[in-house]
Amino acid sequence: MLGAIVGDIVGSRFEFNNTDLYDFELFTQESSYTDDTICTIAIADAINRRNTRKDGDPCYAANLLRWCRKYPNPMGGYGGSFARWIQSEKPQPYNSFGNGSAMRVAPVAWAFNSLEEVRREAERTASVTHNHPEGIKGAVAVAHAIYSQRNGFNPGELERVGNLYYPGFLGATYTPGVFNETCQGTVPICLKIVRYSSSFEDAIRKAISWGGDSDTIGAIVGSIAEAAFGIPPEIYTTALGYLPEEMSWVIAKYFGNLNKASWI
Ligand SMILES: [Mg+2]
Image (cartoon, rainbow, N blue to C red; front, side, top):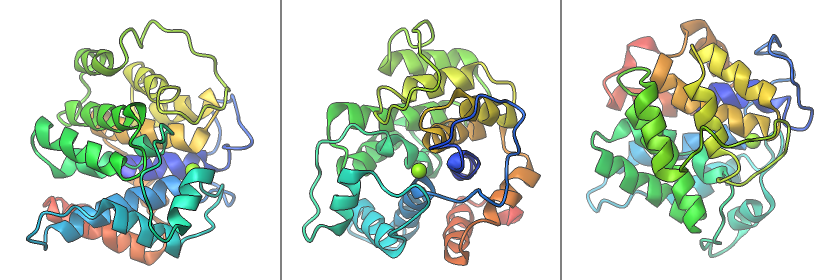
């Protein structure tokens, strides 16, 4: 899930000012975390907290609400319907198929160790807001793609998984630079970008230079590319420097629970 945060921060300054350059600076003073990072942290925090609960309630909605209300004005803001959900007194799913369900799902793909659980939890993270079939599919597809690459880059498996959800996604024609905030207009492109990448940094650069919804494409590509290629330490260390301390604590606890705390 660090890949989602890296992609979000790198893409942040290009969301409303796209670039088609490949050799841009990854991190600058204009870079910031945005809603993609906040929501990813919220899902990780839900997983952290659920470990201490007995009733099995994943609390995805409660944690999304808590974190998003605490950070009401991130760079780039929140999507309109999601912003209303955050402020609602009785938040209900609103049948969204926006790509917000796909950009926040990465933590479940590492915290659960069977495909069945990963898919079930991905659906749960989506359905509190994005309960349209395409909204759920986008989250499940990304989580499945991450899970399929956890043992390293496996392009054949990535193609197989992609075709389960978006048949023919590799052969389809996509137009760069088009702003599309839907799952079905974002996730297949992200899968294709990772399929044709050779490293984490290559994937991130391809994602951002694609244009469109740059921070979210960066977050989704980053979350899958992290599994496929791993993240160079200097890249995730720089990204972590942009986060408030309380987000770093969530990340530390999350990785501690995975017994992978040695890097932090
Ligand atoms: Mg964003």
